Length: 420
Image (cartoon, rainbow, N blue to C red):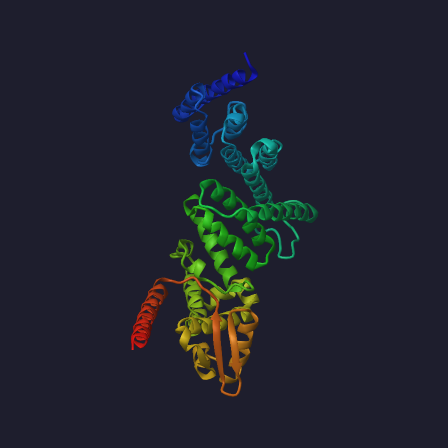
């Protein structure tokens, strides 16, 4: 009898033993044993992944006292791992490690490190996924809030140990980020799974060490590939809160439409942080008066957020710039010579401060154009693209309609002139 046949038989025996040990899961373990016997390895990988992805319902202790998930991985999955889809194998290993992390961090790391020892066989997608999950595990074991913005660690282990974990994580993220950047993003489920894992690790890393603008960009990318259904309500609220704070305080973040238009923001409704929805919507619209009103109504909540109070001046400048950009964007391209007085009214500042605001917008690349200090006007030739909401899309549609009418009239005029 070959070693593979013996391993498969042993795996079936384990499933049958666990079915007897956990009567409420007898059907699940029996199904796995049946798939092993029939050599239906694709169905087996799907069934095992579903099994270990629901720890609250299926996690038990094996007869020898070990985690039932670890026993399933060691005695069943690894017995036939060469026959399995390697990315799904990596996902199973990550789920098992996640289930172990709360009680045995070393065992959790061993699962993923052992898998990565087979990197040559895994292939690039599975290896990138496993590396991202191992990096995320390291950050999780440190504790999400245990590392300050300067990278110094506290909480789990010494400062030196924390710094080593962070340095190793950065190396992995930089290397894998470069690999992913070389491959155009596509809509395949495999690409989404790998990229989602990478950006989740990058997001958690930058939440711990900063800066907020890097966290914002990684979190937005994570939301492109992740399913909100996979997150708990607590995780959704935490992500929405952190993302809103990063959008408001992140340097160079001037397009809030990606967050305001995403379902994640709605997760704050009915929570103590629901005021962030109003603040984000007012910011995205460049509504200076609305932003000020919301800030006054929720002064106590804002005061309790160091991220906002510590960068209050930057946030105020950002809202002012967004108000001006919004004003320009709302105008037809043929009507983008703006008087300082009109800008002052929109951004709620004295006229003598408008020039500084315009210069700041020009230096940041939010607009392009030229200023006429004598006439007190600015001629805008380009404005920063932005994510549009429903009303803005309808307004843009109307503009296209008006433009089409003008083109048609010009065509008719030129035709008549040529004939004449």
